[in-house]
Amino acid sequence: MREYLKFYIDGEWVDPVELKTLDVENPATETVAGKIAVGSAADVDKAVKAARKAFASWSQTTREERIEVLGRILAEYQKRFGDLATAVTEEMGAPSSLAQRAQVPIGMGHLSTAIEILKTFKFEEDRGPTMIVKEPIGVCAFITPWNWPLNQIVCKVAPAIATGCTMVLKPSEVAPFTGQIFAEIMHAAGVPKGVFNLVQGDGPTVGAAMSSHPEVDMVSFTGSTRAGIEVAKAAAPTVKRVAQELGGKSPNIVLDDDAFAKGVGRGVATMMTNSGQSCNAPTRMLVPTQRMDEAIAVAKETASGVTVGDPNGNSQLGPVVNKTQFDKIQKLIQAGIDEGATLVIGGVGRPDGLDKGYYVKPTVFANVTNDMTIAREEIFGPVLSILGYESVDQAVQIGNDTEYGLAAYVQSGDLAKAREVASKLRAGQVSINGGGGDLTAPFGGYKMSGNGREWGDFAFHEFLEIKAVLGYAPKQAAE
Image 1 (tube, rainbow, N blue to C red):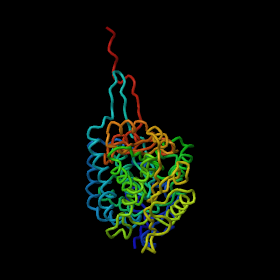
Image 2 (image 1 turned 60 degrees about the vertical axis):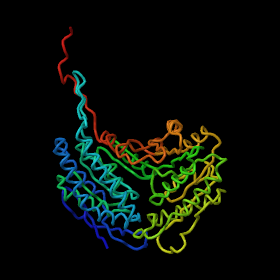
Image 3 (image 1 turned 180 degrees about the vertical axis):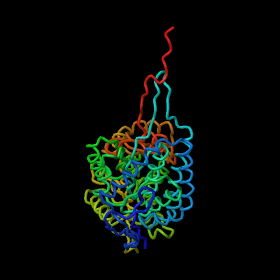
Image 4 (image 1 turned 120 degrees about the vertical axis):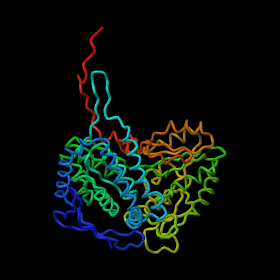
């Protein structure tokens, strides 16, 4: 059993100011997998002060020095690949194949991307007599979720390191093991003291202390919209920058053409990945009403082939992360039944043969209307809603009829038509025909899906302040 009872502050592993612990559950077995120390406002204060002290020198490092540090972090990360993959599976139930294929590699991807961008990123812009300078914002507080733990840690840490910021990280207390190993990676890489700090704990205590701390210049939060609102409220009195990547209820518009069946199948498979625990999952599939029966048949066939079981085996889906999520998903599946949606496959309860672990049946509803609970609320489980539309304009209207705007999807054999539909969707990222995998593409949302952008060069800008130096060069004499 894992036991992580120290925090990483100012380049050292230190005891909490007051030791309090929390058990971490393995969602596949419902047994305790480890124990972590949970911090307090006093621990946060120590970490922030260490980051503030380190900022004075780290912010003045050269591009080349920061590239070297990022390279060392990447090398140490690669050494711990297996440890990270095991931890992801253990703490949040991702199948080992998904951990090794996506959950862990995406962290390496963000590090490599940051290195490449940093090589040519322009921190200064000469505008005649004025110099525009982009400088590191300062001390950053990172509050990250459990569903893609390494993705969300590294897509914040890598650009922050690259731009000369210092930071304090609070991983999710639900899935804290990967964060602890990541701190070990940072230490092994020789990241200068105080540049990176880790305090474990919960949102209401540690997260709130980080968000409200007067010496934190920027807070970057990924999680639920509800929690994001609380982070913004806590940050408001100190007028710090707040970047948020929050919830989603993403539409997937399948157009009426020869690629229809392929688009439906792709949408179901994408939706089920990571047990539906992705904020950008295509949870609302929109199909022409006259092809609803065909969509049902394809969706049922695709979903019936999705295997659920032991994440250390060959199953495609593991459990959802904990009992709280399991119970929420079950309640929402029941709401779909009660409100009259057509249950195509799945439903309440665990899959057959699984009497322990937070396993959810891959579930598809059809004939859903956009006013139903399952079409409005973020379920965060392997539950797909299929809605009908009479025209493409109506599909776009339904797709945009949500408080969220993180992602959207379009499936069509006609690329020009798909591009036209994509242009009308109010979302931060729109994928056409499964297009994805671009770590330089900005990621973030419209409306209540957040503000700011992560990934690639857009992430760099989140961690920079802009200074105008007037009179930097003398004006040329008038001719």
